[in-house]
Amino acid sequence: MAINNSKVAIGCVAAGVLAVFFGTVLTFVGPIIIDDQVVKNTVIDPKNEMSYTMWKDVPVPFYMSVYFFNVLNPQEILNGEKPMVEQRGPYVYRKRIQKDNIIFHPNYTVSYKEYRKYFFEPSMSAGNESDVVTIPNMLVLGASVMMENFPWAVRMMISATFKTFKEGPFLTKTVGELMWGYDSRLVEFLNKYLPGMLPSSGKFGLFAEFNNSNTGLFTVHTGRDDIRKVHKVDSWNGLTKLTNWGTPQCNMINGTAGQMWPPFMTKESTLPFYSPDACRSMELVYQRPGKLKGIPLYRYVAPKTLFANGTDYAPNEGFCPCRQSGLLNVSSCRHNSPVFISHPHFYNADPVLLDSVQGLHPTEEEHGLFIDIHPLTGVPLNVSIRLQLNLYIKKVSGITETGQISEVVMPMIWFEESGYIDGPILTTFHTNLVILPAVMEYMQYGFIALGLATVIIAAVVYRRVKVRLPRHLQAAVCVTACCMLHDCASYGKRRDCR
Image (tube, rainbow, N blue to C red; front, side):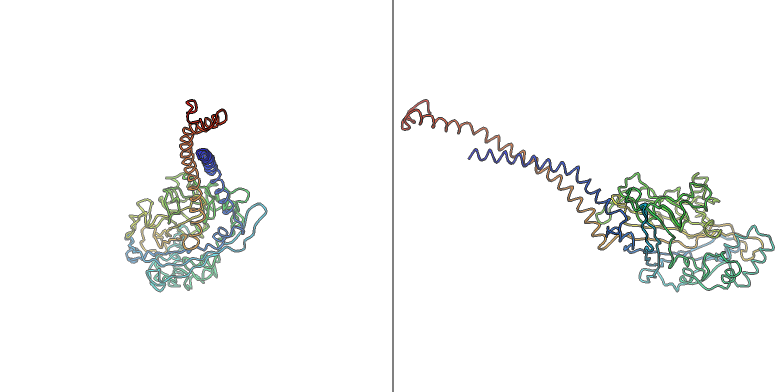
């Protein structure tokens, strides 16, 4: 029995050593296996069903929430007083995104056009598209600034044209009309006699050119040759760099198309992306870690330098002519109209901008933009991109519609494009990229712990067996010797056999 216990103990020691060895190997091999699976599943490839579907059709619900700055004192503004506005909204639109014209190229890139449509969601909105609001008239006040340096006679003629078509400095229209376009005899006149002056040939609206449209021809890397390049833009509309900005750095097309990023991100990584709507590349920086329903994430936010002017941040000099920090001058890609992009309510902008308009209350929670990224895969889990559209207005002599307007950057609307992973996609994502790696990690430590425990217990048992074993063997040997050399019956009487 003792010999059997000894063999069992030795067997347990061997099994424990193997378990420790297997667990140790797993600590090195496990991450390699996980990383290999991440690489295989993040390459843009129709064979990667889950990731390719997310890239192609973006099944995650995406919404655009629009807020209007309703002007409360239009007449006083014409007299030179400070503008007063009140925020109206949100008016929420479900955004459908779908890639089409997808063509894979031999150099490990893929081209596509991404189409977008917007559908009004009354149940999520604070009002209806029939709500009426008042905002600055871009056709009048914007054109006036554009004509500021024209001869006096031309400016007088422009003013007479405004009067002929009964266009005033402020518009009072429904939300639907302002968003998607309204009939204007002035627009018809300009499109007929000055083609190309306006961004669209149909109705004039703030988002008229965005609905049922595409973002241009993107060519991005698939990552098949180098996973570090996956989703990065190779060209846009055939261009590898832009031409509308003042420096080579500002004209660079950097990063991805803004939907996914390369995997294996660290806290030192940034989120560069090219935005056709902003006409430039932008870059977000790491802020903090977090979790979304158990999934680890990194939150990236806009640095204060994103919309800083060239005086406060020299690399942005190419985006000038600039005004105060916090404004991006997009006139060069918006038909030279005096339009500026900023964070909502002039968040993170020069206080002068905030002081020039009453009714603005910026906070990071409500007006800061962010993207929550799963660092292992580079897939966004929660997105909130918030931007504000502003119009630079002022008095222009010869154009009486501008009255005595003080020089001011006037907020018109701000919008938030948001979406987050949920439902079956979240479940699959959580299972494959959180639960399974965690199980593998627990297994490796479990094998090591179980193996060490088995070795220790078996060693203790073996030692106890080893201490007792010689006495039994000695007795057995003694009995056998006495039986062989003497009469076994005399065994009990012999002192040398006791």
